[in-house]
Amino acid sequence: MPATKKKTAPRKSAPKPASKKSKPATTPEHKAATAALKLVDEAALLLRKGISTGAKTTESARIEAKKKAHVLLNKASSSLAEVLGSGTTALRRVINKI
Image 1 (cartoon, rainbow, N blue to C red):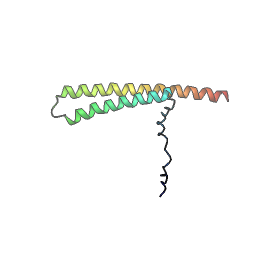
Image 2 (cartoon, rainbow, N blue to C red; image 1 turned 90 degrees about the vertical axis):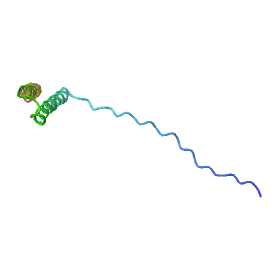
Image 3 (tube, rainbow, N blue to C red; image 1 turned 180 degrees about the horizontal axis):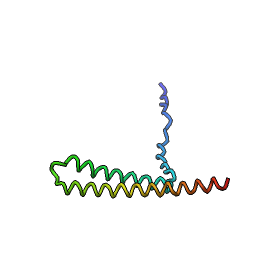
Image 4 (cartoon, helix red, strand yellow; image 1 turned 90 degrees about the horizontal axis):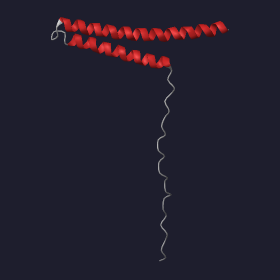
């Protein structure tokens, strides 16, 4: 009996490496909003910690946590106010050009 050639499956090429997705360009407003959100999260963490351990901590420690949280929230508020102010200024310039 003659020898028959064995059929082989076509070879698959090596998988292509995953392409890196480019990050969308972040605007200064987006960066400021992200920074403000981090400040708010940190303030909330301080306040939650003060509430959950309220009986174990002294009143002065709770007041100190409240003050720190207040400072963080003021920083977040002022950074967002700056972003809104710059956005308002840019919008007024565009409107005035029209």
